[in-house]
Amino acid sequence: MRILQLVHAPRLSGAEVLVKGLAIQHQRGGHEVCITSLLPQQDDFVGIRAELEAAGVTCLFPTSRHGRVGKLLHLYRVVRQFRPDFIVAHATLAALYVRLLPVHTPIAWVMHSGVNDFENGALKQAERLLSRRARAIIGVSQQNIDDYLREIGKHPAMVVIPNGVDASLFAEDNNSSVPDIAVPAKQIVQLGRYIEGKSQLDTIRAFERVVQSEPEAHLLLCGVIEEVAYYEAVVSLVHQLGLDSRVTVCGPRLDVAAILRSSRVFAMPSRFEAQSIGFLEALASGIPVVASRIPSFGFASGFAGVNLVDTADPEAYGRALLKALDMPRANRQLAGYTLRDTADRYMTIARQFVQPLRVST
Image 1 (cartoon, rainbow, N blue to C red):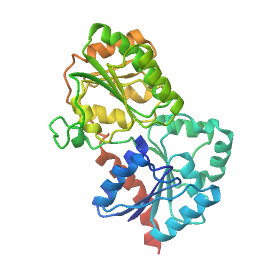
Image 2: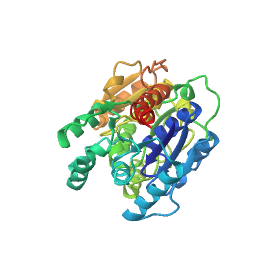
Image 3: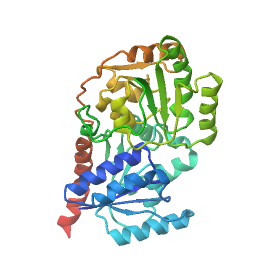
Image 4: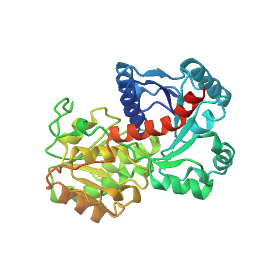
């Protein structure tokens, strides 16, 4: 089968990391896979692209930013060149654009957003017009499907497929890589884009409480700088609280598995998530986790070493981080959340719509 994966922008973010994993899994399974996008590749995607191409996955990204017509022309050329049997569009705008093309290839739309995109009236109207152009609507969480049903209505094929990770990459006995920086003995790490919804400011305020009881603690913040003003606010708060020697604020990192293996606590105070890849990676690594008490993290509440708290409360959040520093790593079984599980479910959807077409020709 020839599968085209479409993303909004090739960047180091959760949805794109999932797409990378799916593409490589399906390519290794004997299928031909291509990844394309609406926007040009960002600098932080270089390493991921190298992994994709080493696995035999074709990457056809635009070399410059296009307007609306240009985006449609780019997608149409990619479809004509690659001739996919099945198209998987990740995120709202990508799904809207590809369904405007004059092609008959079955399309599945994957809803990754942690917020309700249909609060935007224009997007809601466009989706109502194009809804049936998607053969399947896939939500990475039940919340995605609930939002769709409430805002758009029923669709003939709706399914929840949770994101998955390659747990073997994050196992404690995987020594394939080591951090490229010296790691403090009691390091807390938060990984995620610098946007308000990821709440790095809450982690810094809580960490101020942690160092009062544990002066050897260190906080590492890593992520794509998406909102420059918010990133600057993070740096400013660190300086304001006198934590410059205790907090490292840096950009995106590719050695996530090594960072998780060498750190003592993983913090994730997100205000909203659909189904976070980073959260799953932390669970797979066994590291103690302190995260916000939001619905999408609820499935992990029973796992060893996972504490869901009110991360907007610096006292409660700080106590949870301090307690986690003394907790051992856990062996968590992520049945249903592995990359193979997820890839198999996507392939089941693809075969549901591709096989009948082949039989009839």
